Length: 393
Image 1: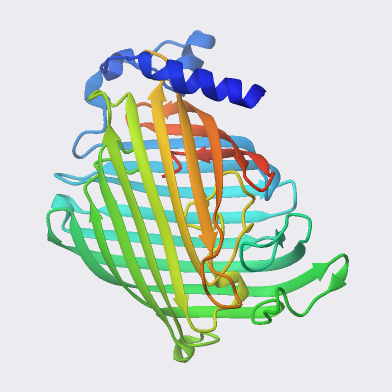
Image 2: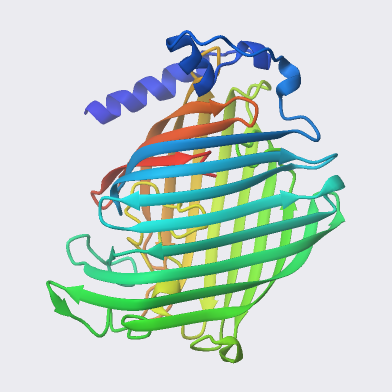
């Protein structure tokens, strides 16, 4: 009852709090609030400090938090936001995370546009020591029937793309997934298969292959988009000749659309569709799964790895709004639905939704970087809190 009341208040009252867009000098972020609290003199700067062409903003943020798959965690995020001449905003993130469940994660991601958007380079490099529960394959699994997996993981993804028209890019890349020291246990007993599947359940697994990618991106700021369309399509051919366990293919289709509802960036409707399809024999840990997108954001309401299968489809809608005139505090309402194919016949037979709400705290007003704190409830009875640096999508 309490959750319904909160949703009612946020949904029906928030749209009427229409706040006009104000200049950077009147906006506040975390550094402004800290200076006010500790009476630190504000340095001389004006709106010219905003992220204009040739500008660069650096933010280093130590963040305590919580995630269902890791418990309490301590995280340090180093974020560099760059805007080259006549180009979209580029983002470089370096993240180190240590968790209550003895997980260690080091990740470096780049989304970089050169001058005039002529070239686009992206990468996702990460090393993980990552014990985690898995719940089997398909949608007919339960949270109680889980298998504990221990593994280490090295991911090396990189793509280089060239502009072929306004907001359009095409390019090639290489992706490498290496899991080792894999051990799986159910109720303290080592298991050799999960949902009847053996490949990658123990020992090690490798997926390695070249990619062909197409990108359309009309957003001006990927850190906190207020308008535009993003569509990323990646075809990957894993090859035994490059070290992969098997020759198999995958296709990723990631699309996002943003609508400025009030014309002042204070009320945004964001839509997200994330889909991954595979063909062939895929190592268990390389199958598409809840929360295993690049930014580990897909599927709020469920624990990471909750649903896994050879194919995955996902939809989400999020309404973002400003709560304070200074833009320091904002909020969101969101809902999502996901499904994975069944391992027996490779068909989609069931979809499960989730709903949630959250707060946004402005960390840097020039790059519009936020600290996101969300609470979500999944249809299978799960409910969790999520922390994120930047918008979820």
